[in-house]
Image 1 (cartoon, one colour):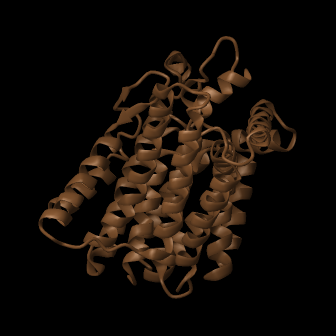
Image 2: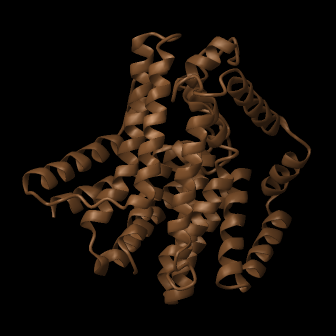
Length: 395
């Protein structure tokens, strides 16, 4: 009972997002999500070890995860040749965090009962609705984030960022929630899922995030092709209306085609990651040591020598893995993602959770080639929680 309560509380930390956090300087920060995540896992382990309830581990996805974790840890050990022990220790903390977020799927797999799966989905979507409405309020009352630039945040203006303070990561979360809402509506025909889908879609459009637009397009295409072709038609209609009536949607899309300032910065980020990978092809520079590496290569600007909050990542999760853990780590991480795909595609034509999770996963993969969404805390929380429900079995 306590584990389930802590699990729900951890999910609820989606609402404060990045607003409540303890800064560790440019090395990162500890958020409420981190605190309750680790507390949940500690209680889960205590319950399993001392009450003698064995921990069930799904081998298909756990094996590649463990292998990638070992590769990432090995890259950190090798990084001691060029970085100080303190820098490597700080970098290793993110690997611990990554392990913890994946472990949420194991907590769900062991403690959530099959008969309560839909209740957990409804709880997640309800929290998502609150998250979206906070975004609407932020857009109305705090649309200019330029004053947060001194604290390392990007100066977004007139964009829905909600409590992640970043429109791209907020859009990633909304794309996942949209996929789940749409899938469950198609199977269950409940108004709650349709209303939640509408809220998430409107909020996502207002992020004006092009990577999120690609993510939701992937979601709609996946569900439309597998389950309901009418979804494709509806998606095209919504896109055309948004493009015609919302000038910022139009300017963002045209900006991507003409390579505006943001698109150019993204191209440079990809080039930087490829350069680092080319120079360190086998084991990379060390998992999550990318901030130190970028500083060494001179990738940061003079007025922002540590790169702000985004300085530890690349605008592509896959390129980031390649640069920091090399070809070995990249191969094992792709192996991990492939096994997730295999799990999600099973029963995809019969099960709303599998369909929604598969669409969300594919959308996230597309999205993560433009922002580092595969390693963003609140995105990982929502995704690995959903993965845990899928591992649990039929809904």
